[in-house]
Length: 111
Image (tube, rainbow, N blue to C red; front, side, top):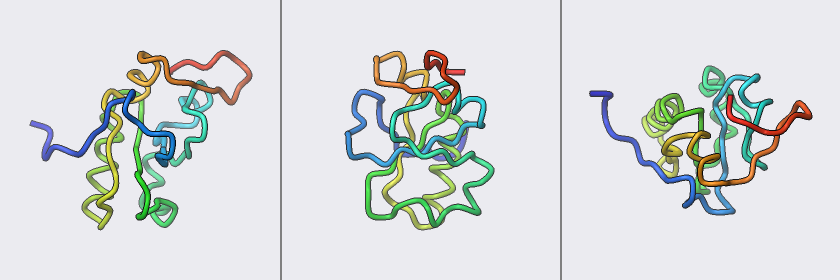
């Protein structure tokens, strides 16, 4: 229904060495994101693909997994074989109790 299935990983299974790319909008990022994640809004991915490692475990995240799934599909179609979608996005990340930080001084939450 939504095209080919993209490789994914559950929030609890993301390893400490994974390179997280958060593709949400700036206000979503500021409200709460995974510590150490890299912010690359979805629409900037084509211009910033050189920032995406090809030699590490890359996990792409958005709010619920839709946008990040599109980014994983795009990167896979452009030669990346090391990218996975965070199943359920930041909503799942928060639901399993993974750490979050905010950029606005407020308690971190998923917007």
